[in-house]
Length: 306
Image (cartoon, rainbow, N blue to C red; front, top):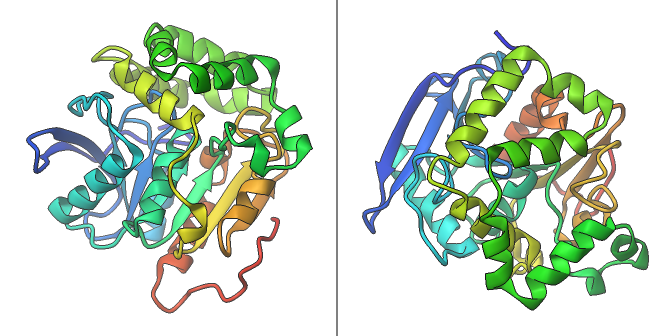
């Protein structure tokens, strides 16, 4: 067994109202507290987190394939709001009630859309892809901290979304893995190279690209463009987690993002980068469960650090 991840306990698909299928994987007790996982870029439902932690905390962790990834039916031209409706339907079909949610990396804006629309009861954004296309709302340091290659992709997406989507559709699982490994510090690579994790990640990427790259490409254009929802409308509790050595997901480790979400609590974890979801599963889930409970709403509306 991996130190960081287990194989799913249950796998399945649900048929949505428009006839599409949505793939899911579950860990933990079937009657546990429901937490939906919105995975990172190009990874399928197979890549969960919190080996043993979900059982210990009584969490029913449900990872979801976004449309076009894994076994979920493609939905060309889909929007963030469409994804929020997919999760609303999944929650009803799977008996999840009003679930909490964890979002990793590129899954962040999709999860934030779910929070804006009230689909989830609480949200943990972990190593979240920031809204890098909106520097006019941020400090000058935020805009100038973007690496030149990322700034180029953001500008390309703004100028020509269709062309950018076509470009991203040219990538594959091998290219995605190479990008992640090349941009990760040694502390993260120690996690990613752990044999159990490495095998699960390879499988998740293979499944993510099983239908081609169109699903990933659509995700990326949506995430890199302007987010068409208002973060100030979020009324559920939000935790924002970054590793201090994470230089790829947010120019300022979510500092500006936290100010845009009412009451968001920002936590920066020392000694780790983008792998913080797998190294700190217990505090992430414990805090999320406390916030999702009806009698545990935060009263301090100011963003705070870890």
